[in-house]
Image (cartoon, rainbow, N blue to C red; front, side):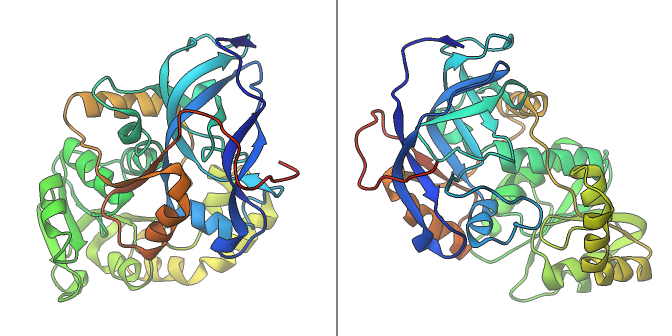
Amino acid sequence: MIPSTPAPQLMQAFVLKAYGGPELTVLGEVPVPKPGSRQLLVRVRAAGLNPVDFKTRRGDLRIVQRYRLPAVLGNELAGEVIARGDQVRRFGVGDRVFARVAKDRMGAFAQFAVVEEDHAALIPASLNFATAAAIPLAGLTALQVLRDELHVARGQRIFIPGGAGGVGSFAIQIAKHLGAQVATTASPRGEALVRQLGADIVIDYTQERPASVLSGFDGAFDLIGGDTLEQAFAIVQPGATVVSVAGMPEPQTALKDMGRGLGLQALFWVASFSLRRRARQRGARYRYPFMHPSGEDLSELARLVDDGAVKVIVDSVYPFERIADAMAKLESGRAKGKIVVTMPDTTGPTNHSVDGV
């Protein structure tokens, strides 16, 4: 390990003690992690919040990722490299980086975190830590779905319901950058934002059903699930793909995205059967992908931000000691854009200690 100044032995972190409600998370003191040979130790300056965080806390995702508890929550961060493994070549101590941390470890809601070298990228020169921390998970999801699953190209029409949320705010802008026409849904409160992001058609979902006014689209990126996902199959033209990150995983999720065997593929086959049948009835294809961490894709997002093609929409920024409040707002569904917490500069004692992390 190649250090700068020595890191403290303990740090403040937001820890999940057991699956369930918000009361099962606590701000506590845990050991500072040590980076491996191809990893970075990052002093976290800010961390982004995402629905996967409260879904993990509730235990909704145990079928695909079971963590050894207690565990430090959090999936995306921005900060400074303070140490690196002896085989790291792309980053030096002092570099400003942002990353989606490894899915099997989490750990972004802490004053220090370990990040794989290949999962990190340099923060866009135009951004501060808080704004950069809002990019990785939502930005990577939007980029990978639009580029790799929907293959969005100039002149296409893409339906992206829920455009005012974290992923949606990136997806609208990236789809417009790729040359597509974008239709989205929003409440009257969110209409101004999605139009600012570039949406060509905005449907007030409190007044109209999207399927009653849209048809013949080249693809759909569903962020809502439920009835909105069902309508997407009717909105796209025959042969088109509907991608959802709010529906049910399907067999390709297990095989392509997770590298898992026949058991999980069969489980997802059953879970997604009704959705896939609905898609077939409409002549469409259904896909539920898992985003993969990628420093290369983060660098592409950084270029889009610096070039002005993508603007990062931050709903609110909370100090780390109020992360429980930030999580409550996220879970309420009221946020427009991303919610971020910023870390304290020092590592003082905390109110709770947490054994076993």
